[in-house]
Amino acid sequence: MTDVEKWMIEKELSNFKSFSDFHKFAYKHNIMFEEHEWSEYRDRLLKILNLTHETGETTIKTDLSGLVMPN
Image 1 (tube, rainbow, N blue to C red):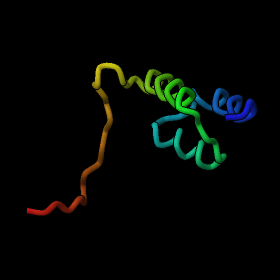
Image 2: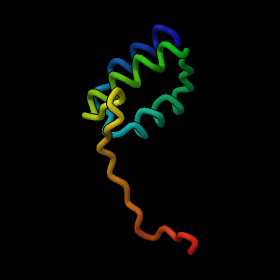
Image 3: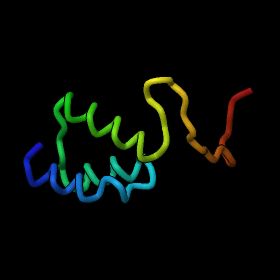
């Protein structure tokens, strides 16, 4: 990740409302993460979103309406 890309993410990090928003932003700006960078930003974003990666506990709301499952 370049210094400019890091600055862009730092600027927007607290504005993401979901992990998906973070991914969309990175994809839109063609940001490629090294493994250590990914771990750092993943953990920081999980804290901002009040999700805990370390304990495995998450608070992710999913809408399963309209999902067709086999019998």
